[in-house]
Image (cartoon, rainbow, N blue to C red; front, side):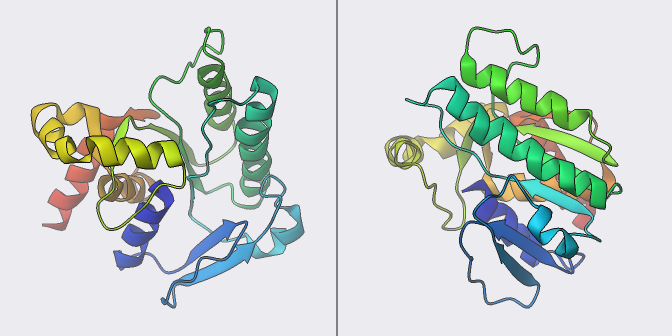
Length: 218
């Protein structure tokens, strides 16, 4: 869902020349900016390394729910896959900004009682140590889809169907607790272009960054 929103903002931004989508299936978008690489093992980008140089930013939006999943399996999908891909990108593009979609409640100490939070924290910490020009960890909580974006996870779809009608009210009363797919994409683009005030950003930080992008655009 986040990836769909980010893609939309990239395609709308005149400063973005090329968008390379890497995934297990091609995403067909009628836009000359877009290229696809289909790769089953996304944690190993070496087979397509010759196609990955010259990029300014990576918006890493992959992720799965940890519900019902053993910690070791969740770590393989979350930590191993992300760090495997990032290692290749850092070697090929040391001037790149890497933005990782993490989650509210992530445990930076890596020592908490919640398994998914520890794994996400370890992933964030490893990314922040990598030799990118900059790396930012986005920790959204509630996210409202704005332009037809749809989550893949059935649980998320159910939650949005249940809570969707009150999300606009929550955004008005407690804007720091909710962001949107549109704001996520706008904030990622401005962080890639101009940087962000901190390395780890929650909903309120993401919203402020997106608002600054809109203000700069007039």
